[in-house]
Length: 263
Image: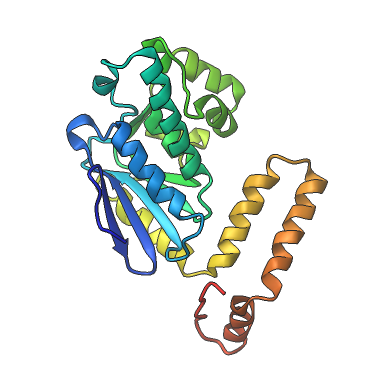
């Protein structure tokens, strides 16, 4: 894969991992239209591409993960241009949300507005103890439009999400951990290292199994329990005839590490 775009730094890591860094530190890694299009192009490719087993997304520097949309760019937009740009942002969030490959956020600093929405569209996240979070849109005369009114309540509960969104209240890394926005906190400078370690463990497992499990969890949570259980069995049965299922069983019985090929 081509290493870098104008606003993204893309690095292949050992074990079929991909590290994606939002690379606009001079504006706290805020995404402009170009950055959103680059993220769309990258994540939409994963619908068909089988080259990677896990994706980690982070921000350049230690100040910010992502401050959301670039408000300087937006300052000159007409209402029509604003809506058109927002359609690009919507596409970007959908591409991350719908990625069949596990996506983990390594939150190294502030994740505000669309930056927090990006975190919430990842499968899960780790954060530095110095990270800060907020959905600040109502303080700017708009509202969360990248899924924040839907993903935050699912993470922290309806009443707490209303408080955070209505008051545009920042919250700490410790609160993010307690409320389920992130899975674990790391010391400053260690979050990316830890995230890549976990991503490596995920990538060591059967990729078809991981993808089917991700799909079953995501779709099943939108269903009643009996329907979700049927969905799980359908996903399970898709794996029975795979080479990786046979390799996993053989490796267990031969007391060796399996060599999964995604077939």
